[in-house]
Amino acid sequence: MVPHLITALTGPINELEQRMLDAMPAIERWFRLEWMEHTPPFYTSVDLRNAGFKLAPVDTSLFPHGWHHLTAEMMPLAVQAAMAAIEKICPEARNLLIVPENRLQSPSDVADLAQLQRIFNLAGLNVRVGSIDPELKKATTFQLADGQSVAVEPALRVRKRVGLRHFDPCTILLNNELPAGPPGILEDLYEQYLLPPLQAGWTVRRRSRHTRCYEEVGKRFGKMLGIDHWLIHPISHSAEAGKTKAKRMEALRAAVDQTFSKVRRKYKEYGIGEKPFVVIKADDAGDEAGVAVLRDAKDLPALEESGQLPRSGHWLVQEGVLTQERVHEAVAEPVVYTMDRYVVGGVYRMHLGESVGPAGRARGASYVPLAFEHSTQLPQPGERPGASAPNRFYMYGVVARLAMLAASYELEATDPEMLELA
Image (cartoon, helix red, strand yellow):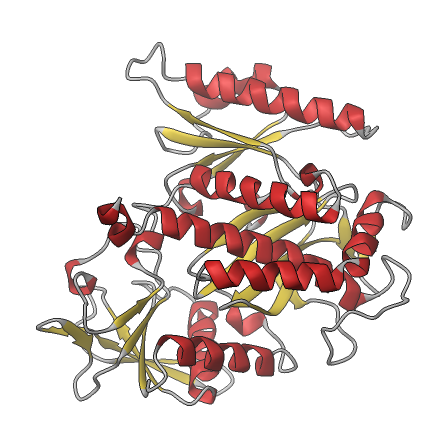
């Protein structure tokens, strides 16, 4: 069984699931044609929220972490996807260098890195870890409680290539969000493949651009499926602070009002009795910049005065999507992992209390695999909607792939080579 939904099993989310199952051949063909025109991001993790009346992505990471939460049953999917992705990019690839976050702060960070290293090792690559952290001066080995270890070495730049002592990779896998911008050591690497590209970092990336791309994808997919794209899309507006203190909040206030207004209309249209809320995020930074929840537009001045607004001059105001799934008493938020064009697995991020979005990544959250009792991720035709874990996961995977496709549009729009040609 899938996690318990507070809403009835006959609710709209099950109608959406049934619609996707019935249209599965058309959906897969639609994606296949899209991938003929667009290059998928190398890997992603997509945070989903299932409100019972809609299913929407609320965050798409292009430097996904948490691979160690995937089960052993999911590993073959990840390894096969890694094989396909590497073969497409560099068929003769032998050596792969993983560039992690600058500071590995917890056993969880090390376990995540160990799992990523294992996936590509099983895909037939020699894999080593090279840090671009200027504070790392010598090779350091991190030990895990289960006996595993990860050796992290200082990355070296030799002319136009990056590698390690006695290790020259043809492919460099970034697992570092580059919050301070592209470091010189990774720029102008014309002789090596750098995945994801540098414009995937937060000094270039904007949440508002991603949501615009996702809305475009969602509308086209909704038209193909015959559904209102709002059922898979969170309404959002971006805002840029004015140059003067008096005008600082003007754009944000307008974006908040617009978002609340549109969400209320949708709630009225679908007869939803919940009270809407919005989430305010930094448009130009990762989640370390903070997330603010606003339940009433009139509370915005108080939110600013309290210092809870994300520290940014650019904001994204996004419709808050409730999480109505529970595992026992804990909120269960789906996170879907993809590599190349494939869904490779997922987990539920669980914690007690209400969840409203990325703020759900609170300390103390725990992770459990998406609920598979059998080692199959294929949909099960004929199962009642809401009663089959593989069917529910198929629906999650469809929406996650829509977010992945939107990310490919986003990366194309910021590709320096394409911009030069334009």
